[in-house]
Length: 215
Length: 215
Image 1 (cartoon, rainbow over the protein chains, first blue to last red):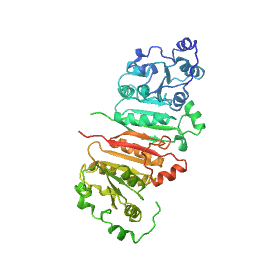
Image 2: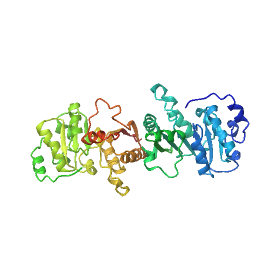
Image 3: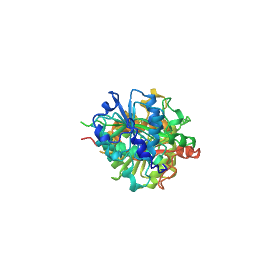
Image 4: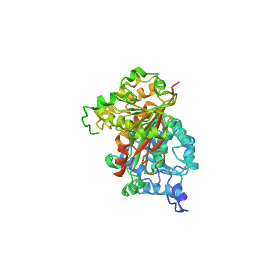
């Protein structure tokens, strides 16, 4: 994603404290209190400008969503949309996915979404891919037993890598589509990237992967 | 595959007893004796007319190959090719994959190849797919620990299904390509189907899957 410098982003977001969570470590284990209910909590890691997470939040008003986007200059777009169209079941964080265990208790997150993550195509950057084993261990730590990751991408190399990495970690797959838009599910929420790459005729890959319960 | 009735096939094959094994149950546990060496044994389930298995046997003279093709009218093509160009490291069987344990001891087969298997696209026929769990159990029974299945297909639905079925069975993937011919490995042996579907611009899918060793 091309990053535009937005020096005003940080200050703008910090003013929207009902949407942007500046100190998520203080809410670890208390997200139900923050949202004011016991609804399931789904997080998206790498939300970009938020089209997916906001579409999901509208489609599922009884689920709480947290959009995680490292870059403030990008995350600010999600906050702006939420200022225009308030939704009580969405919060935005600008934190590093490596540190998710600092913000969520074990089992506090009910599902993890990854969409069009940076492919980091060079082998020497494999550790940065959001489906590398250390990231999988982080997701597993905050999900319940048999927790799920839902993942979409247009990037063939990243999808090939992820099927290997996740199966080697011990996950199994309950849904796989190697060309999602051929029979696009009615409830599919497209991301910004998904619309762009599908328009170019590229297949969109999707999976639902489950952590194998340990004994 | 379109089947032509070839009433002469059975008699023709039975006359080639150095190639066509009429009673493979008698060789269970004794394939090394049949081949006259201790080389690794790779089997292909569903060999069609044999382009893949014969190409592999030529490329790997120190591996023994068994081509398994249920239909005599198809398998006869492999036998005919072996009569024209004899190869000491290939045998042909016309047996049902369901019964592999009747022909091979535990651990006697070193690798299983599946290529362009019948997709059986209807859900009610899922049990007939060669990557259905009962077939996986059969392959596992004749392979060593951490045994491998190498699988290619042009059929998206079958590949999607197989990734799920194999991962749910407890297998993991060490190689996956969702468009094999984009960077076709130099040593890739194309099957008859592979050439036909690739010429039509369809992606060829390939995986190497490993059985997770049990404790």
